[in-house]
Amino acid sequence: MRKDSRLSRMLHVLVHMHYQTAPLTSDQIAQMLHTNPVVVRRTMAILKAEGYVSSGKGHGGGWQLATPLADITLQDIHRALKESSLFTIGLTDEHTACPIEQAVNGAITDVLQEAEALVLERFSQVTLDQLAVGYSPDGRLPAATDKATDKAANPE
Image (cartoon, rainbow, N blue to C red; front, side):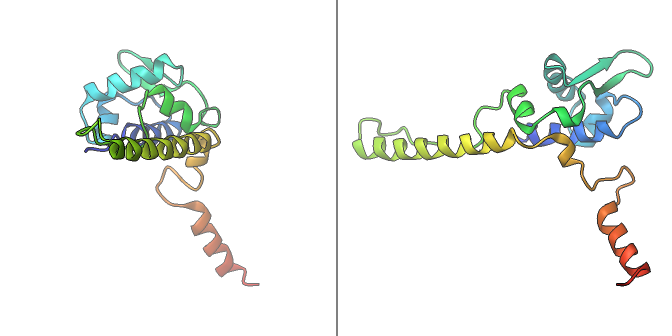
């Protein structure tokens, strides 16, 4: 079974958008994600309907953030994308009259629902600006590099 990576892909795009001075076109985002611009437009339209991004047409147009990263949680994007289940573990349905299969499916369902509730609760506590911590548009990780440089320049 193929994993649905729309959530992580859109989080990636949104954080990149935060650092852009100009809107990103669907073609640019598609290139970043190694996908088709039609897929990008379809998915970004969902985020636009929820107010997380906006779009402009014509020369200089494209997608940009409409909401600050600090005001968007992982759970917000998960819900906007209407992600079904976090887990792709399937239940067997070959012997639905079998009491053992019913017990197994019931136990798995209960555990997965409990785990999903915990994950979604944690998603509600993580804002997208937290994903950008330590990232710099030039690709270096300032916190790690600067600490090493400071320590070398000023040994204690």
